[in-house]
Amino acid sequence: MDTDLAARLADVDARIADAARAAGRDAAEITRIVVTKFHPATLVQDLFDLGVRDVGENRQQELSAKAAVFAENRALRWHFIGQAQANKARAIRAAASVVHSIDRPRIADAFETAGEADAATLDVLLQVNLTTDPGRGGVAPDELESLAAHTAACRTLRVRGVMAVAPLDEAPAAAFERLRGYADRVRTVVPDANWISAGMTADFAEAIAVGATHLRIGSAITGPRPPRD
Ligand SMILES: *Cc1c(COP(=O)(O)O)cnc(C)c1O
Image 1 (tube, rainbow, N blue to C red):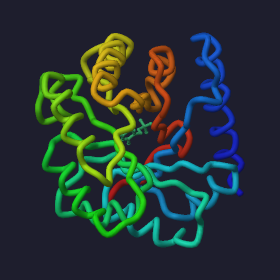
Image 2: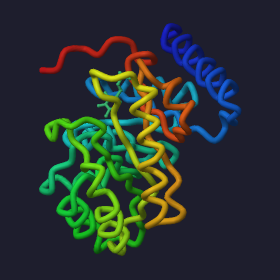
Image 3: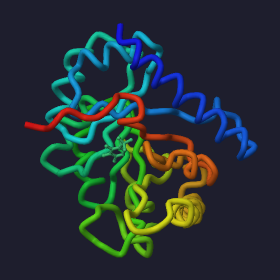
Image 4: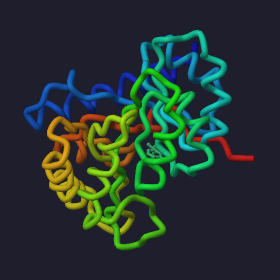
């Protein structure tokens, strides 16, 4: 067992607890997802042995390969946090418990079609673009309610809330404050969609302050990512 990994995980969890306390929140209502992208499946096993149950991946192939290693492990939940492509929806759906990156009607439709043979519904989040750069991914805020209505009408999808990545050129606290407003707007369409997926290594305390329910933390826990081949 990697004692550094255990120490980093404990340190991050202590910082989450501190940020929750400072915000008057209960840390038990916050799900800490460990982003394991680029790292081998052995790291996921080490994390599982340390009690981690929620892990995140941003590419379909890597998600599918690692999830296959843990196919017998019903306790581990895989979160897909990357940009989704319609032709990968079936493979993502087969592996993931939650998809954080629904950002256009066509992607919602692809996941819906992929799930028609399934009994279970898929939890999904609507990814919102907090920048003015369309290349950054996420739905433009003025299209959010219509995307929420479209996705909520998909029988096999359950809209749980919103997801966002902080912009590079703005203080995360200000951007996440907008995200909280977008989460409220989604709840005018889907009243119980109360998840907010926000906060990474550099900004999870700011995300907790605005009410994030799901943190996506990679390098602070895993250490630096190995280079991608
Ligand atoms: C990689 C990634 C993260 C984690 O990033 P860190 O800075 O390593 O914590 C979170 N969210 C998304 C969408 C990512 O791609």
